[in-house]
Length: 206
Image (cartoon, rainbow, N blue to C red; front, side, top):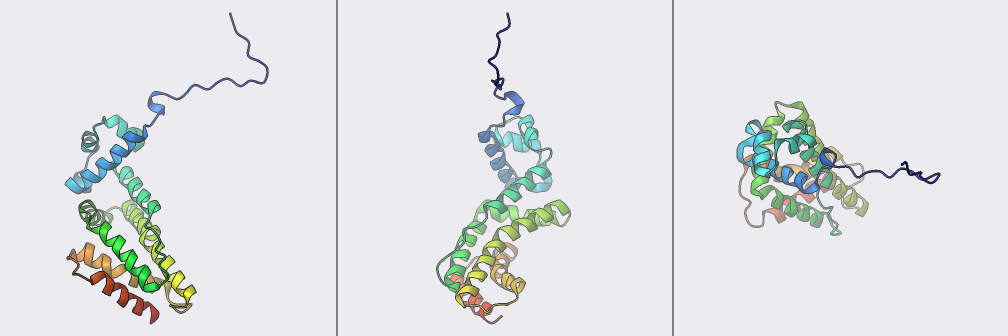
């Protein structure tokens, strides 16, 4: 016997099941596993099998979300770019720079970050897609915050209007990145405060 449906009533949709449902906790476990694998074996030796094993899931769970390890890493890098860094708002150029350097320094000192970033940089030299993703992450992350600091300083009259913005961003972002990621040297006591002071003086001279 067929039950009639009242006129105008839409058929009730069944909730998606099986492959249509991507559990967020599994997705986050896979993302965490990718960071662990990158830090442990590097991009070149990283595999979907290793990621799945570390996450405690089957390979199918990974492939439902990303079709290759390249796309997985690109997704993670893009997500980091979107999250970005907190925008300092201390009321002064030197204070904003000091806060930015403190936050950035803590992030770069993290054991996982200190291993992953150089590895992805090396891979970027061979892979244009990773290179583009890293550049985008830097532009939307560190450079995005640096641009905000420079604009706020211009509005407060601490930096002259019309200063070379690209050079200003290089001054803000370059030294700490060089010391922490390229040279990988420890920061002496008082270094971040002195760096903020000197960088602010350089920005005022533009």
